[in-house]
Amino acid sequence: MTGRAMIRVTDSISVDESELEETFVRASGPGGQNVNKVSSAVQLRFDARRSPSLPNDVAIRLMNLAGHRLTKEGVIVIDARQYRDQARNREDARERLFALIREAAVKPTVRRKTRVPKSAKRERLEEKKRRSGIKAMRQRKPGFD
Image (cartoon, rainbow, N blue to C red; front, side):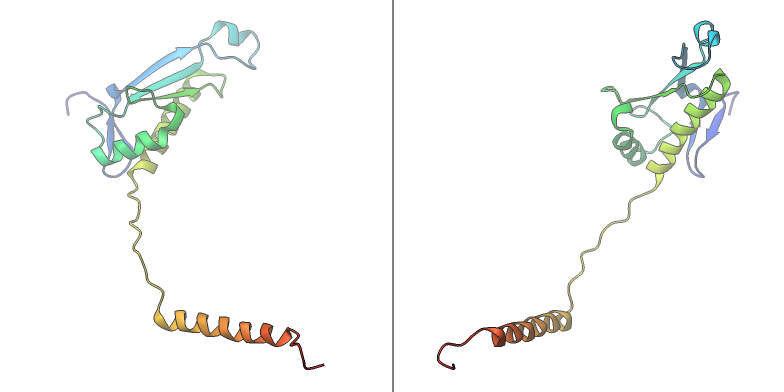
């Protein structure tokens, strides 16, 4: 590779540094005067739909997982403003994106239909008959008084 930094997300997936677009904005909340002067909040954008780093099935699962963070264009936007300094917010945003990608990389297990065994069905019906008989015995029968 020529000078391009690849960030390893899983054993099989690495994301190119150039695919991550970071914007630094002023954060609200605690921080005193620092909040008014420094752009410490990070807005991380990642184009999941057009990313060459992600296999198609992973990209689809990622877009489904992203929820409200996904734009109509297929871009995932992550806001990080938890910390007072820019570097920690930047790291937080990246780690949240990579955690999302790792979750999407796990293939869901296919559910196999199973059948109830005949013996279990028979046992269930026999138990129902037995309970029915017990309850029938509790009823008052007219003419036996």
